[in-house]
Image 1: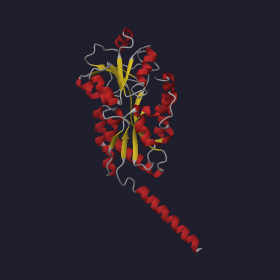
Image 2: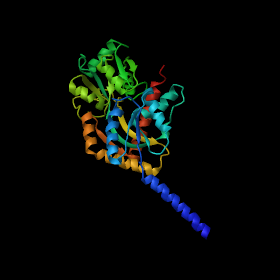
Image 3: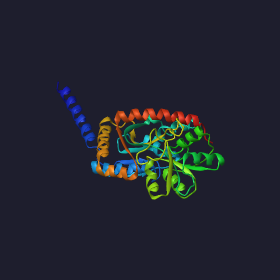
Image 4: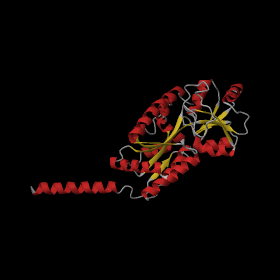
Length: 323
C-alpha cells in the first residue's frame, strides 16, 4: 500500500510539473521564421502578428527572415525545429506545393507537409497582375496582345520557381496561350523591387506589398485571380470574368508549428492568435498594408489548407519539371 502511495505521489508530481511547464508557455522568446526576405507578403503580415504576440505574451517574438529556394529553406528549418512552440513559421500558400515540386524535379523534398501543423490563418487574398504605371498597358486585353506580339520577351518576376508568385502567372500563361520570360528572385520583396526598377514588365502579387505603390501611382493593377473583385481594388476585373474560368489563385498567410508540438502549447498559440485577430493595432496594420483579415483557427484552417494544397499540387503537376 505504501509503495502504491509513493508511486501515485510521484506520478502526481510529474503531472503537476508537466502542467506547470505547459502553463508557463511562453517563458522566453518565441522565434517566428518568415521563409522570404523582408518586404514580401508573409513578412508584411508576419511583423504585425509578431508585434501583437509580444503585447499578449510579454516576451520577445523576433522575426527571422530565412529566404531562398522559394521558401523551401525556411519552411524546412521550422519543420526540423524542436516541437516545443518556441519556433513558429509564418508561411505562404506555396508551402503546400514545394514538396511536390521537388518530387516533380526528381529531388527529395526538404520537408513534407505533415511535418508542419496549421495553427491560424491571417490573410487569404487573390493575386493581382500589376504593371508599372509608366507602361502603356492599361487592360488585360492589351497585356495579352502585347505578350502575343512579343513571344518570350515580356518578363515577369517571382519569388522563385513554383512560388506563390510564379504559379499564378504560369496558370495564366497556360490558359491564354502566352509565352513569357520568368525571372525568379529569392523572395517577393526582391521581385517587387525588380518590377519597380523596370527590370521586368509585370508580376503577380498579393495586395499587401503592392498597395502602397498603387496608391503612390508607381504601379497599375490590371487583373485579379479572385473569384470576385477584391475590396479596395473594385475597378480591377477578375480573370474569370474576362473569360479564364480556371484562373483562380490565392496567396494566403498562415501560422504553423512543427508537428509534435504538445497539444496544450498549440492551444495556447491558437488562443493568442485569436487575440491577435482582434488586436486594434494589428487590424490597423493590416488595413494600412492592404491586406484583408481572414482569420481561421485550428480545424477550420486545417480544412482550408487541405483543400488549397490539393489544388496547388495539381497545378505543380501540370507545370512539370523546370530545367
